[in-house]
Amino acid sequence: MGRSRHCSEDERFLIKKLIKEGKTYKEVQKIIGCSAKMISNALKWEQKTEKRGRKRKTTPQMDRRIAKLAKTQPMMGSKRIKQDLQLTVSTVTIRRRLTEVNLPARSPRKVPLLRKRHVQKRLQFAKEHIDWPEKKWHNILWTDESKIVLFGSQGHRQYVRRPANTEFKPQYSLKTIKHGGASIMIWGCFSYYGVGPIHRIQGIMDQFQYIRILEEVMLPYAEEEMPLRWTFQQDNDPKHTSKRAKAWFQMNKIQLMEWPAQSPDLNPIENLWADIKSAVHEAKPRNAEELWNTVQLSWAAIPVERCQKLVDSMHHRCVAVIGNRGFATKY
Image 1 (cartoon, one colour):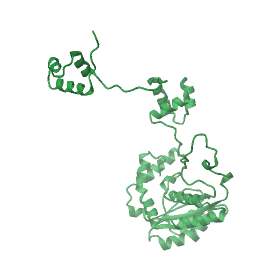
Image 2 (spheres, helix red, strand yellow):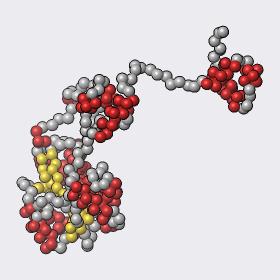
Image 3 (spheres, one colour):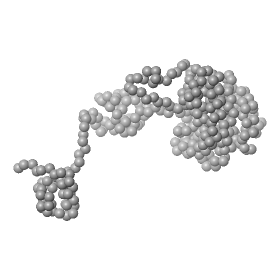
Image 4 (tube, helix red, strand yellow):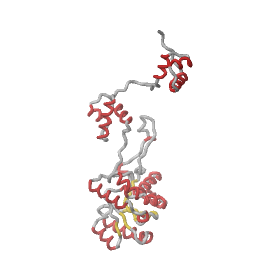
């Protein structure tokens, strides 16, 4: 007995349609002029996925073991996974399996080390301030110090597009020198109403120099530009919380904001420091004096709208801290 004729796609469609309408095999045979076997094959036929390439080297069980270990120990490399699971496949195959389950290798974000007490304080701050009205945030004077390096980074992660095996060609590499070359320490402040004065710190910053900056730089600006009732924000650096600094704030009747330690992601001035570092990278100053001039110009060029957007982000920052159970956030 010979093999039955294969039906075309149109014939399969018509057969399935007629059978669905309630036609019998004999009625379909008369209409189309085909055998009963051809009708049976048409009803059973399914589109098969085309398989190409060599046989998969890992079993589904091996894939699950690889993924489970990577999830429980996310800092473990593919070489260590191979050793711990005693696998015979290559590390390239292991990395491929992890990519398939959306676990590719990524650079970990650097964040402050948070102890249990830090996490609790951050959560407490976020819960106490999450419902603050926007206008209350407008009365905060945000302050901080930062180190600006002559040959530093852009202030954010940088990538390069290059062919394989060309990582050491000059056009694809970043030039560095020891310790980043010349650097300056700066103190700055800003509020919802725009950037305040920026001050270059000479020598080592201690409690005495800090109080001098408060007295000669910050206070005259705040009395002139800030609302009648305003609050001063600073981090918990020892020179900020020294007895002399506390006495100065009390003597000048300046209200301080309670600030959780290890919380740069809650301070919007950190975003302005990133802007300054990016501007320095673009300007490429050649020495410390040009670096300071670049910092001053880029600080003065920060628009009021940028400051307002950062201050208005405080509600979202509090939400993010609570959402991440007190740990570091994207801010």
